Length: 239
Image (cartoon, helix red, strand yellow):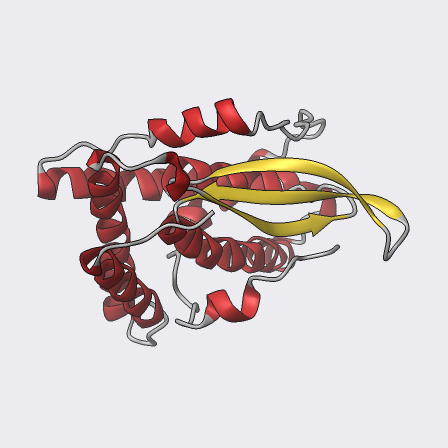
């Protein structure tokens, strides 16, 4: 599928990329403002796209990861991408002939712009989730099985931060952020995805959840990302 973007939409993409790159600045204040402005522009832009009556052909499908087995962080990162970055994720079982075994392929579906930005965020969070947990574990001598609890807290903290950014954007613009209902209908009509299994947690570590939530509220999505990250990190991740 292909889609065309107006000159105004392409300018928005370019500006968001520059802000994400600026969010890696060593200047904490500058980085914070850049990350917040990027989130605000993303929200405003999606409101504009939602109001435009275009065909379903605007949606693209992109393979983003391939796993031998599910990673505990995948469901939390996927939830953040779907809730705040206007894409949907589906999961396909696949027989990989190169390694002679079945794997799970994760695909993102959305507009070209949203896929590009979601790829930035996916790469960033795939690095930061394990990195932050290792920092927490070393600092607190926490057991390895606290990982899922910590990731749950990290997810809650990030969602709280992104929800606040959405509220600020709505306050500044006077507009309300809404889901892309056309994307949901497109997926339901054309793709009929199978959701990945989501097992319940057997061991809950309340300290790890609390620490993860605090770290998630402080983590600025975009920090450490370069403007060329999409080109260099779009390939599948096999673990």
